[in-house]
Amino acid sequence: MIETVRLSEKARNQLLTLKRHTGIENWNTLCRWAFIESLKDQKEPPNEQIPSDSSVEMSWRTFTGGNESIYLTLVLERALKAGIELEPASVNNYFRLHLHRGISLINSSTQHITLAKLVNRAA
Image (cartoon, rainbow, N blue to C red; front, side, top):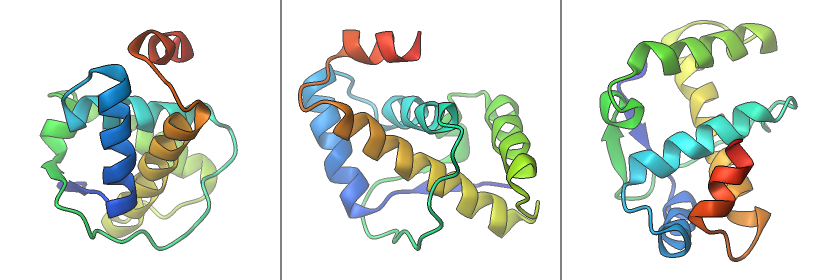
């Protein structure tokens, strides 16, 4: 259903900041943290057009770290609750809304986020 994860230039820049502060080098790892951070928020992400204008792109398998079914189930369950059509384009867009909101949430939560702070937020 989701084949490729593409990020906006704004999200790319935010991830670069997170990489510097946390020491986490892989885009996919940071993106997984961000996606889960967004899902923790019970409010729905704003429905907005998010450009795919950066050079950061990864396969769904790379994003999920080999746990495709788990992450797809999380997206689909939340989409159902939100009344989102379970058409591939709608699910992909909904996933991107959560991913980009999560990146912004983590990045804006504190100017000096560290790996320890990121782990504490997840706990």
